Structures are given as structure tokens and as C-alpha cells.
Image 1 (cartoon, one colour):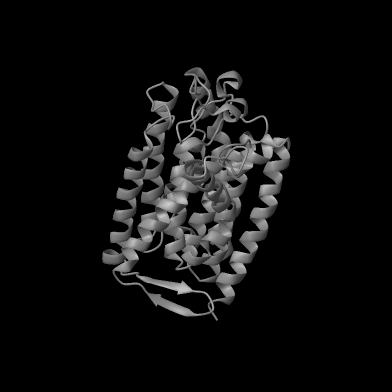
Image 2 (cartoon, rainbow, N blue to C red; image 1 turned 90 degrees about the vertical axis):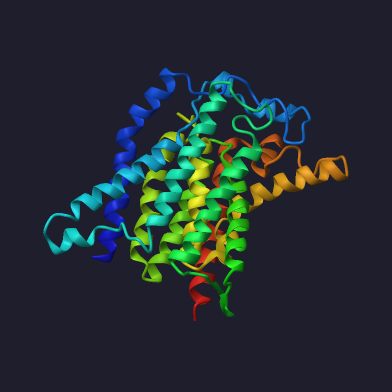
Length: 349
């Protein structure tokens, strides 16, 4: 029954995602929801010469907002199984995984992140955007993430009374009030990993691996509702990936990456396995880290470490075909996700 509770919603989320994609993509193409200009400047204000060659949205005319497929299919599935559970029958009632202590907060985070990201995407495609940020300014996006993280931290601390964090192979850290600060820092850091949405198939595959890993951790910790939620997101991600492999029908963009990165943080804290997040989400770490290293190096030493950042574009600039970069990221992602699962589960003993 536990397996059915997890994989039935996953399958349904995938099917729903496949079914709603023609409607969503049709709307995006009809209204020309793609960037009308390539990246003009880098985050440090310099002309982004290489990025202009790699990012050619205005030539490919590939819409943004593809992340709608992911969160829409997940939300529809969640409430569909909630409605099904209201019918009489022991089997049907057990399929519901909408619960206050495990899934309310990640669902709320997913929706809020998706909506804020959707606004950013809308501004970017209608040319009402900040030249550097390509949508809402970086400060506005970071402010939004800060507010969401503050609300999430308060909910954990005051409502769920969860302030403990597992340190693998050591024990429990009773963070108490420091939990709030730690939560905010982790969410801001993880959100920066959203820069991985840069090549066809890259973000969909990487996020599928990450959420599968946390779904397994939650399952083995007997957090079945949370595990089901993780795999529902995987179902939506696989539906998105079906249409995002080269040539991509659309990009995930901010409405997907913002929703997924901040929801991932909530899941990591709910499992109390946030300290393995850098391992499981290693592809996000190296993408975000490479951008930070590049920015600092150019500012303080006036030279580049990478041809272009994030790292996946560096490999692309070296001449690697995009598909090779993507598939190697998938391989690295699976390896580190496996290591993270092992550390999380063995670290409990």
C-alpha cells in the first residue's frame, strides 16, 4: 500500500503533465512568450559576448514559463487524490498525502515560488525588465525569497516545532533560534542554483534526480506523505522533460526554478537532512558556485576563471555539444544523489 501511495500519484502527475502541455505550449507560442533579446550584459555589468552567442532565444523563438507544466501537474494531482480520498473505502482514503505536518508547507512554498517566478517571466518576455536581470531585478527577487524563507522558518519554529537538524554520523543539532537564520541562508543559497536552467534537458533531468533522492530519504524515514509529494514533483518534471529534450519546446525559466529550489529547501528541512543537500544537489552547487567564483574573480582580480559562467556554459564554450554537457550532468547528479542517500541513511544509525 505504501508503494501504491507513492507511485500512483507519480504516474498520474506524469500523465496530467503530458496532457496539459499542448494547451500550455499552445498558449505560450500564440502569445510569443519568449525573450525578444539575447543576454546583453553579465551580472557585473560587462558586455556578455559569449553569452550572446550561447543564448539565442530571439532566434529560436522558444517560449519561457515551461515550469508551469511541472507545478500545475503536481498541484492538480495533489488535490485530485485528496478528492478521491473523500470517497468511502480503506484503500482510497490512504492515497491522500495532503497533511499539515508533512506537505502543507512545501505545497504553499511551491505555489508562492511559482507565482513570483511567473511574474518575473512575464516581465522578461514583455520587455518590462531590468537589463541585467532579464525580468524582476535581482534585489526584488532576493527580497521575495527572503520573505518566503522568513515565513517558512517561522512556520517550522512556531507551528511545527521542528528546530532539530541531523548531522550525519554525529547526532542531532538542536538549533533553536539559530534555526531561523540557518533556514534563510540555505534557501537563499539553494535558490542561486536555479542558474542551472540553461540547456535543453538540463534542469529537468537534474531536478528529477534530486527530488527522487529526497523522496527515497523521506520514504525510508517513514514520511510517506512527503515522499509521495517528492515523487509527484518528479512525475511533473518527467512530463516537462519529455518536451524539454532537444529541441526544447519551452524553457523551465523562473516560474519553475524558483518554485523547485525553494520547495527543495523545505523538503530538506522536513526530513532533517538538510546537511546532505549540497551532496544531493551537487549540480546546483557547482553551477551556482562557478557563477560566484567568476563574479568575485572579475571584481577583485579583473580576470575570468571560466570562459563563461555558469559552469555548464563554460563546457559549451569549450566546444562540448550541449547534449554531452547535459547527459554528463545527469550522470554526475545520479552519482552524488546516491552518495547523499547513503550518507543520510547511514548517518541515522
